[in-house]
Length: 329
Image (cartoon, rainbow, N blue to C red):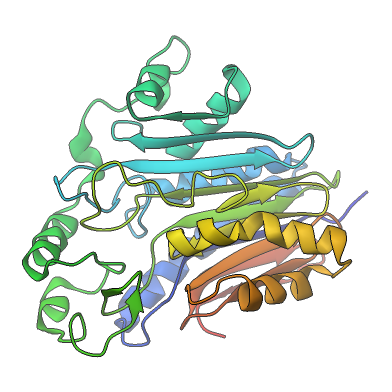
């Protein structure tokens, strides 16, 4: 029997000035969702079922930017994306541009399990969600995903003509901040005040030694309609194989350029590095000037994480009783 392990995340790049109650709220949600995965693994659940269930829990809570509470496009709509991968056989499924699907990660799994394809997007994904037997994943009311806070943050983003990577700062504080335009962190050439909770993800190895990973996001506040990030892209935001399972978060364009998730597996396979060394190598050497983080588990039950920004909401647990939820180094 292999040793099971699980890692989850709620976004990389947490501003140290994020109000304490927001940090505590995020860590409480992560701890609850982590416990869901631990309970399933203790009962012998398969890795694929665990990542599906855990990310679904994260999508349902508006604390993070996935499912309910997703970021809004310039048009004020929600366009969500997700992917899932089974390391046993390297099967995968992904969706992009969904706006009426309650849990995008579960639809991504149905693409993998019940369609001849690996990736469906926009109208094609929405149509697939309406097929018989899948209707339970379909939510006709788009307002379910939209929160009052996000509507306010979209207004702020439009007024400042910027894309906001963190819209979890209370609206009044964000509006008062000058770092959007003066000396703040820059990503993709755009000034932003902070870069905090967005994408959610989960990586698991079960007691049979099978790995799986899943990632889900609403993308960027005030993004162009039709924008696709790293989260639904197998090899970029999500990857699983016999060596490891990986879920990434951060600057999507940088993660795409570096094929970050796949690269962790590649350096384990071709350079013979252990998991944490592989994670550290990829975060340091593959992101160029991009900012990102990732979580990973190995096929032998190790957990690892890495990020090159100010923090990452994350949690992990292993079969030997270790459990941790954290934000900073």
